[in-house]
Image (cartoon, rainbow, N blue to C red; front, side):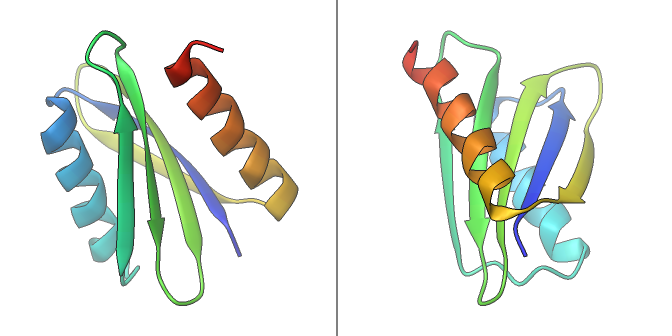
Length: 92
């Protein structure tokens, strides 16, 4: 089952990526692949992570403290979430 997530972070992009992966591990997701999409001039990014049974996409933005919310999604909503976020990052 795919998951989508929303994170707020007061960390730089690299630290945000690491923190999201650590948080997923703490929530019992065993991540075996991950990718981080972001650009230096926008205050948000996208982390895509996979394990053997789930795929997760977490959109993060800069904020006052770190927090992460996850929710299950169907494949169509997941794909739309990823495509929309990547479109924003590309400037589409």
